[in-house]
Image (cartoon, rainbow, N blue to C red):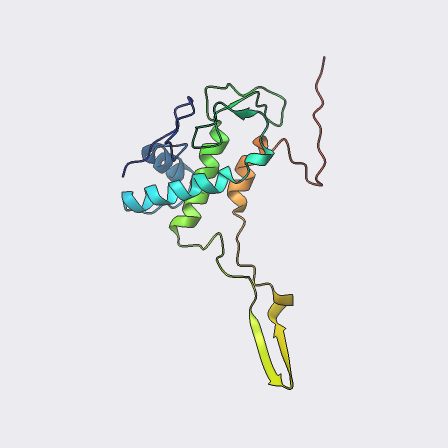
Length: 171
């Protein structure tokens, strides 16, 4: 099934911010590897769009309508530099971040772990149960796609590094 690319109108059925052709061009220019099979690449791009949309709480503005499938386009959005983002567009940062995320999904990385994140080192049953875990019980099952998050930085205005943020502008 071909990608349905968001065109800036808030489509109810879009599943990508970038076309496969444009994604492949960007990937080639920046040394990013997408699956060579078009169907697999489209699946990875859909997963990449879902990954970058998980940051929606940190984007400024609001969706154009309640039925749009993806987080962008948005009304009243600004970037980290204080410039307004047109409400009929998808920022390039979203597209590039989606490609970086798609590369990870396409490589088979289990980005969103489905286990509880605990790796058992040993278990003992003698009267009482004793269980010990590797690394304090955490295996690091979920992955942060750093390149995607770096590409999104200009759009992550509503979330500061320490949980506090505010905008300052010139009058």
